[in-house]
Length: 314
Image 1 (cartoon, rainbow, N blue to C red):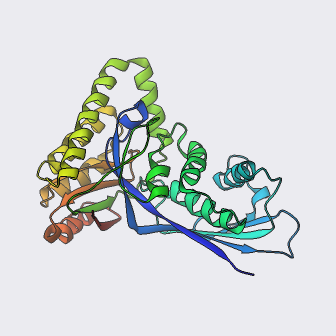
Image 2: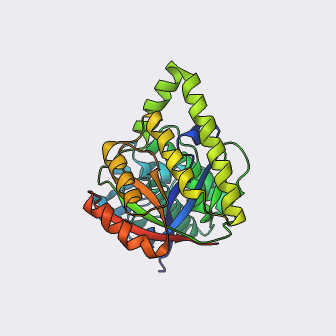
């Protein structure tokens, strides 16, 4: 019997993380160098309705029904069954793998959800439309992030740069000129729900200063969009620098992130900032292509566990 497979890219947020949760815009782009992959193999000899999950990256090898109620993979199967109004899936083996670092701001959870939803819906003979993939993946994002903005599932499902405002129609971003980013991993894992929740508590306790930070992040994202669509990238680095300063004031950076951001700038990056939830995970640096390796080396020498060079293209 045939197997059904699907993949999904990672993502990186260029501007607007955290402020996006408060209805300000954010810009995110897919990262094709890292991918999540799901393979569904029919298992007709297995008991009726059993979905056996194999995810060697997280040492998982068991039936979906044995997972905790809070497991994103178990929740994914329940959501898919509800969507198709079926009591159970046909017996199968779901194999999940990913080259996307977990809890690092690269959209690992969203990419795994998108890949699994696509592979499983194809197995059911009813491949989901992209808008349904994104919407169902958003429901699973709530497990990972508590109060997600929706940007991860959107950019991963559509596999296009997006200008995203929660609750508004998706706007795809036309990048006029290619540009190069170096992504540096602090090696410190941090669930997005941690900094998101802490920031929300601070905002609830005293909202005016945070609203001012969110408003400035909004202005930066709008300026960046104009520059990207016009192909005038000379301001992009300084906008990144300012956005990072705002994130520091929001309390979502970390010593590791700040050290890598400073190292990238010292090595010749046009600008640098944390990307994603913060408190660890990844940072990004805007570089001229000929300086990418130099900046990558500087990040590794400053404590990055690994780096990734990617180009965002029109």
